[in-house]
Image (cartoon, rainbow, N blue to C red; front, side, top):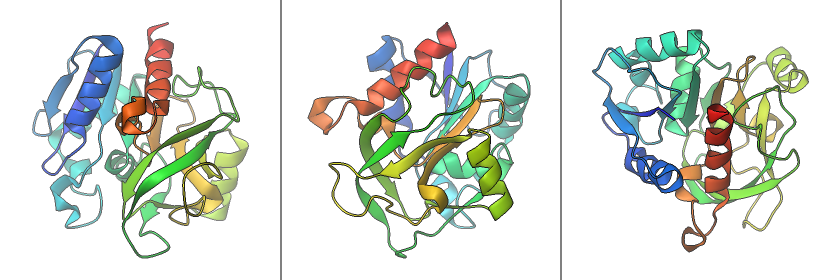
Length: 229
């Protein structure tokens, strides 16, 4: 497996993701600075969470115009896999690789806690191939702008096409099931070809029982195995 983790000014989960991938695969993925204009041949590009460029304009808007994004767009156009987590999800929406927008949480407050999400039945995708539809996964969220929104027609299309990857669900986590007001309880979506996924929960922060859950490792391992097969 060949992986690259993109790094922007303000990224704060790049090292967490690097450690998670190394723990699962035994190999350390490369970190690619946003000013680079090329990507080496890879199987998966990961855009991690954080506050790229301080979220000073609009979450992900500046990062989506960084030089490395053109290489990511080329990678995706060739059918390459791309995963965006939290701020990475926001960046994917800003690039147009995924539809919709992420706006401020319905409660108008930053939310940081464990949530439970349910795996949905989706189009064929390496991100969900090795996960059982209906399975519940627990992992943390940490965001201020995680409220997914799209027009009614777009939401219906996502739902009908099997592009909703994960939904917030009732579970052992405390508080309301939907922590941010996302339409259709959406916690993550995938592209029409199944090769691009964005999600708000952080799998890289749930890779062992010592961290409160190993469900993130389950998700990441399943994805990597699907891409390697």
